[in-house]
Length: 84
Image (tube, rainbow, N blue to C red; front, side, top):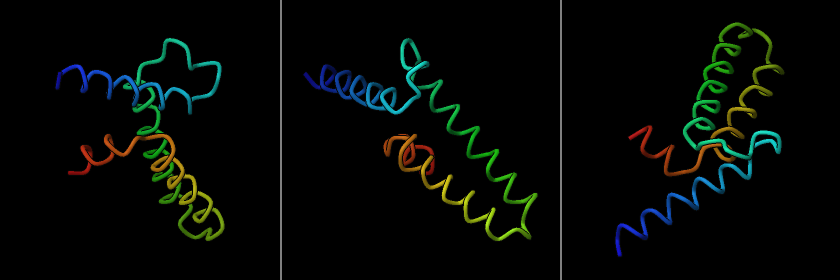
């Protein structure tokens, strides 16, 4: 019973992550693939902050984008396991 609940939980997490993906890539896309896209986007934005450190408005926009990635694109379980 515990294993079935875990499998169902993982399926729900995967489904909810796919719902947030653009419509064209929802079908047949794995959670791991979407997670890697999100991780790469965070790294790209971090580099942008470093490159444009004197542009305050650009940094605020970039930090807002990072916040969206953390809260909307990556599920909490992935974040907690990644940073623990």
